[in-house]
Length: 184
Length: 364
View 1 (cartoon, each protein chain N blue to C red):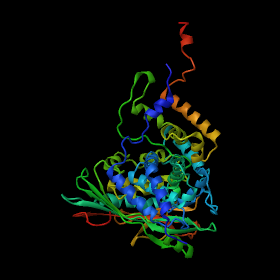
View 2 (cartoon, rainbow over the protein chains, first blue to last red):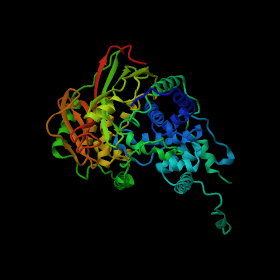
View 3 (tube, chains in turn red, cyan):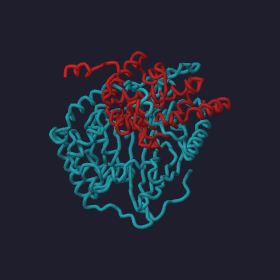
View 4 (tube, rainbow over the protein chains, first blue to last red):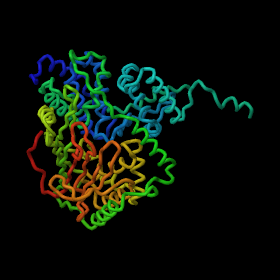
C-alpha cells in the first residue's frame, strides 16, 4: 500500500526540516564523533519523522524535542546491538572557541571545564546538556529520556552538584572556612 | 562570591558556533529530496541497522497525537540491565587502574590463542603495501548490516543491506582524501516478509566526498598518530581497551573483542599494531576458534570469536598465511528478529591496495 506522497505532507515536512535540521544535527554531533555518522543518523531521524508525520507535533519547538527523542534512540541503537547503552555521553567539541574568562563568574577555560565535564556520568551530561545547551523544558527532557519529570529534575540537580564538585566550586550558600579562621 | 554554575555550563556549549557549511547544506538538501520522494505509508519505521526496534517507542517522546488507526508498535525490550551489570564488573576490574584486568583472568582458549599468535607472527613478516609518489592507498570496504522492520502484525522481518565504500588516501596524508560511498541496497533476504521489507527499503544516497585534511567527515577518525599512540604491549593495550570501552557492550571481554574488530576493519591498522591487537585478543577470556574455515566476501580464512549472552558471536576473520584481516562479522547463535541461528547479522570485509589514481565518476 505505497501511494505517492501528498504535496501538503511534503510541504509541511520541508518546512519542519528547514527549521530543525541544524539543531538535530548539532544534538547528534555532540554525541558521536564522526561527522558522516552524525549526518547519517540525522538522515535516519528525519526518515522516521517522515514516516510518522501524523504523530509529529505541529510547532517547530515541540517537533525539535520529539526529534531529539528519536535521534537519541537512533544513537542508542546505532552500531548494532553490541553497543547497547542506556545513556549517551555528551562530548565537548574540539572546535576552538573564544576563551571566556571573565572575572566575576569564576570562569573556567575549556581544558578545566572539559576535565570536570568528562568526569560526569553520561546520564548527568545528558541532563545538563538538554537543559542548558538545548534549552529543553524539564517536561520535554523527561520525555526524551523516558523518565518522569520529577526523576529528571532530581537527575539534573545531582548533575549540577557533581559538576560543582568536579569544578571545585563550593555552593555559594554554604560558608565553610571563615568560621575556623577566627580562631587563628 | 556567587558562582552561577548554569552560566558557566552555558558558556561552554560545544555546539558549533558557525552555521552549516555549504557542503553540509548540499548534503542536507539532497537527502531531504530523497526522503520526501519516498512513500510515507510503507510498513517500515526506520531502516537503520537495528534502529527500528528502538525507535518504535518514540510516540512517547511526542506531544502524542497518535496516527489515526496507528498500529501499536513494539517497545524496545532489549535495553536491559545487562549493560549496567557489565559496567559494574568492568568498573570493579579496572578499579584503581593499578593492575589492569588483562592477563590474570586467563585468556583465549588454546586453539584461538595459537591462531592469533601465529597470525601476529605472520603479520609482522608481511609488509604493508607502500604507497608511491602520486599513488593512493585504496581501502575498499564491503559490508552488510541487518535492517530490522516490524510488520503490521508485530512480527519482525530482517534483511541485510549493503554499506560499501572506498576510501582513497594520498601518499601525503595531509592532502585531500576521497571517500566514495555506494548507495545502500538490500543484499540478503530471509523469506517472504524479509523480501517485502527489503523492497520497501528507503533510499540512502551514494556519496562522493572529498575529505580535506583535518575534516572529520568520513572514516578518518583513526589517524596514524592515534594508532601509533596505542600501547605496544598486548596486555597494556588490552587494559587500555577495557578502560576505553568501560560500560559498553554486553560484557567487558566481548566489548574488548568488538573494539579490536572495529579497529581492524578500518583497514588502516599497520602490520605491527595489527600484530599487537591479535596478541591482545589472545588474552581475552572466552575467545575461541571457530571450527573449520571461514568464508567472507569470497575470501577464506580462519575465524576467532566470542559467544555473548545476547546470542551473538563477534568474530574476526584472518588470513592465517599473511596475518591480514579479511574482516569481521556477527554470527547469530540463536534465531533473532526473523534471522535464523547461524546467520550473520552483519559483516565487514576490507581490502587495502595501492592504486595509481582515484576513479572518477561515481555518485554525488
